Amino acid sequence: MHNDIEQQKNIRHLLQQVVFKRASQTAKNPYSKKTFEQLSQCHTAQIGMHRMQCEDANCGHTHYQYHNCGNRHCPNCGGQRRDQWIEDKTSELLPTAYYHVVFTVPHELNSLTMGNRKAMFDLLFEAGSYTLLQLAKDKKWLGATPGIISILHTWGQQLSFHPHVHCIVSGGGVKEEKWVTEKRKKNNYLFPKVVLEKVYKAYYLKRIHAMLRKNELQVQDKRELENVLNDLQFKHWNVYAKRPFGGALQVLEYLGRYTHKVAITTHRIRKIDVAKNEITFRYKDYHQRGNKEEQQELTITIDEFIRRYEQHILPKRYTKIRHYGYLKNYKRTQRLQQLFVLLKLPPPPPKIHIPIRQRILEKAGKDIMLCPVCKHAKMKIEATYRKGVLVKTFDEEVNKAPPV
Image 1 (cartoon, helix red, strand yellow):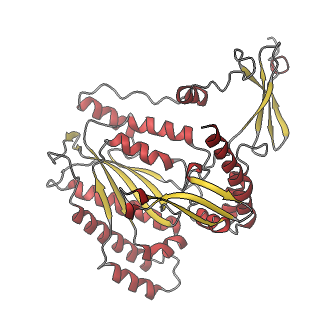
Image 2: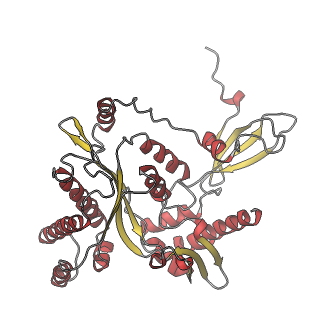
Image 3: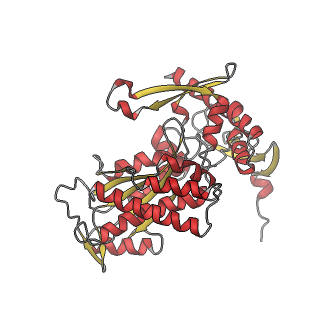
């Protein structure tokens, strides 16, 4: 156990100080360069730190608490925001079946997507939500508007570029301020998979042709792309659609692993060999699902790892989590309150921000403000530094307001 913790610390250190630092120096894109720079400085004096001191004068222990970078592409950050997100979404769940639907894009469109990331990611969200909402309107399947949470992922297990959208979809829905229950007796499927794929493919191709006509996409050879799109009409477009075995909460927790992270966590990285310029990480081979060969390891050069990782840096301020149907952002809180009343449920609990100190105490049983030396007094913030420069002090006597 101790060795595993030390190994993870070493991997995180090398990932920051070797891999991400090199990436910040070699990246050509200014935004990627800035992102890698922040990742390489996470939990270092460059980002900032607090000088902490024990309140017990007889102890007087002092140490530094380094700040995280807070960048959503950082494999070390986002854990607290993820937990908060899962709790917030869990409070919005209703007593109905929920389904996990994944919309993918044929690999023939990867180059086009890479060159038009924002427009093509938007189209992926649009086509997926359109498909679900249109089919849900049909009385044969539901005849109402469901609630949908959509989350963009851009990676495969080997860090390849594989854009797809995960959706959590309610089995029931709302129509004219009334709740419509799910129509499948066993709740084993939402819509027929063949119908999902057909509607999704037709809408996606229709919209991409329209975008080409309006010159909304940067394309080198429009005629060649049109030939590719014509061929894709006759190709199978895979849509994953199943009811999760453990319910909606299971999917929320599964997707929550990457709602506030990107591509890979440090736990999947097995080794970083600086001398050989190699990095080894674990991945799942889904062709071997259920077999012991499912867990595989891949070794690539550090430079190739950087190239793959950079593919998953999202456009600046891009919204990767979106809501549709009765969960759309506009008046969502008010609409959910009405639904809880309609379904005769206790009112949804208020969304409370839990401080990081409390979260770590609950999860790890560790009070980060307790002095690690005397074990009874609290640590207090004495000063804050950024890039090694003192920017603020917390001396009670110095900062105390003068008497009125």
